Length: 237
Image (tube, rainbow, N blue to C red; front, side):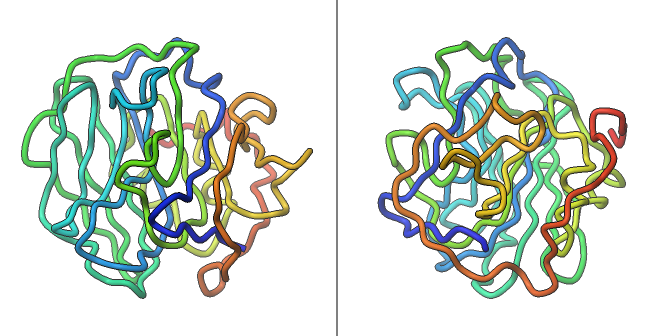
């Protein structure tokens, strides 16, 4: 069952361990979600400093229903593509290095589209052990996501258009086989000890706190069967 975020207080925060020490730098950020409302800022994956308010790395949909990428003080967007409140979107943001132009990859329920952002993101940022990462909002719950989320992940590498298209909206195995360094599936089957487990390496980037959320139906045809191949040996990027 997917998690529904109410757009006011709901968020899930995770341990930073799998990303600690990494310099962004090359990155792939990906989410599978459905929006409840359009025309609002919906923050999804968001990484901050220890205070929870200094933004560092993230992806979100802005109030023009457009994709946005953020790195170390600078954001870059593109044209609006997320106006539907019925489509299950896959939103992937990639960049090859800091201070470069990100690329957006969007599955709209029927086809993929790939486009460069309008400008460059910020300078490189090295993740500290005290940095924080959350889904649904910044840790301080600003600009919260309102909608349903199935999964999200971060890979410490750029990814090509063809590699991104391996992800799909019906098979969890396409996500577990992608090679994410941090991967979260929002389903009770992935909870252990009362917390969601990081599916890239359990015990490292697991849930550390949760506010709100309710359970809702997964996308039509979705299967939570994971890949039986160790994703660390796959190289799609």
